Amino acid sequence: MKVDGSGEKIVVQLPYNDYYSYKSLSQNPRFETVLNALTIVPALVLVIEEIKRWDSEEMNRRGQDCGWFRSIRNVLLKEFDCDVEGGGLSGRDSMELAQKLIGSPLPGAFAELSGVEGIEGGKV
Image (cartoon, rainbow, N blue to C red; front, side, top):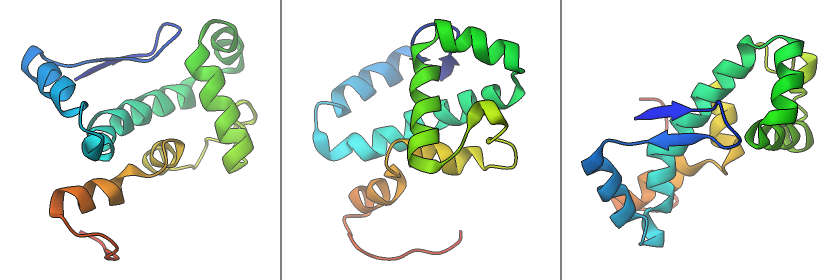
């Protein structure tokens, strides 16, 4: 899987066979959380880690050029009181933020795969 955040949208590229598997599975709403956990969460982790490395000049440029950055910046500020431009990502766990950004798909993914709902988990 490759992730490209250099444009207006985040582009996730999958190998040929994986793409067609993804396309097929995405037709069934039951697999949405599984697919999000497998593809979207890692892509968001990658871009959040990238944002952490940006200086204020790069953030200003991306704020003008990248719709995905504006969206992530606004959701993090409004929903999680995390000011990206004010250094709010420093010390924050990128995996946790990525999951929160899309509604924490992991519990639903595990429930779908195991066929069990509502069981609290622990550490692996």
